[in-house]
Length: 511
Image (spheres, rainbow, N blue to C red):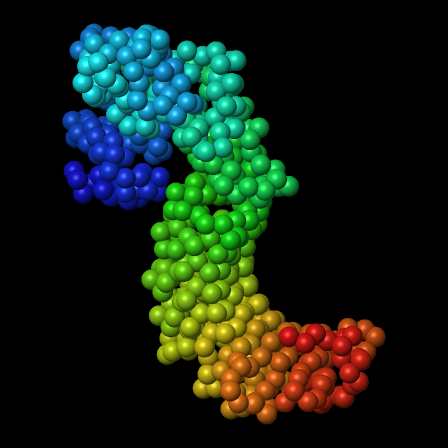
């Protein structure tokens, strides 16, 4: 049973995140042991009854308390309402320890067995105080109270106050109250407290809908956007996400730290939207665990940017599973500056070979030099390869690789190649020049030597593209080049044509 429970938690991003905190781990183990024992007793019970969100986890935990720790024949609903109001007061006032007088104000009778299942007594008379088993249980009961006793004005006030707390103390309350808007989550408590308020659920959904960021405001505060996404994930309301957020099409979180839980939440949003144009996670430090949380949904995005996320060669297994899905939509993928090494090349080569959507690949600033790089280059040189734009800038490549680059002439789709800031030197220059002259479809190439302590007499920095009018040569390509830092020239594939410096600056771009 332990192995089965661990496997389930490992596959659930939200629950797995909380396993690092002992008190959460205790709650998770309590709930899962109850669920798996029930499954063993009733083989008809399926895995869908296992908690998928944090709210479902706590709803199951509370239902377990109500089922197993209440001696009375029925549940005192008024007691749950009272303890919920006291819990909310404590959340709003930063109170974790309640006096007897405060309990009396909210009509909470601590002599009942049900009360002792929620709060613990500490201290010696006359200095006795009471606290919830855990702060999150206090926050859950505060949210539950509004579904047990729904007053529109009271609920709206609670939602607004929680949203405006600057220290974030209202955030977990908001996630629980959002999670309880899901009917399947509320049904976990129905056997003990009856139907929870459906109008309260509609009220909360309306509140959430008004919080959803527009394309213009989405990036004003990334943390607040992710908090809204987390509340939506707890609600499990995919239709609302699809209709409200799906139209945004782009998600920009570059240079904002994303914890594994943020990646789990973002995965729910992407899954609900299904077709996203851009996901920019550059310098978000998602690392291995974050990528793992996103693996199941990244194939739905057209442009995926994972620049500088400290990924490893081992993470290429996730990239492979993403790119080889039959329904993969990724056209542009940036793995720039991740410290990837030769060991990532083989699996990436297989992924490119099997993928049918990828057109733009950036592998710059990775240490790819090694025997496996030739395998990657072989796939990129295949006539069936669909890659149109390839960036291998500062990939630690040396002159010995330049001759192999000539095989790229076999790829008729390749139009742009960036191999600048490598260690090609004088020995590699002739092969790069030959690639420029012989490639049938290349429209742009950038080759800038890596700076070193000696001068490259034949070094070259170049970008070439179709010559624009009025000085176009039919069927020709232009090359703007700095050779030995001395002379500028333009050439078509057949012969060089010297031009003035003024013409070069106006018609060409120096990379």
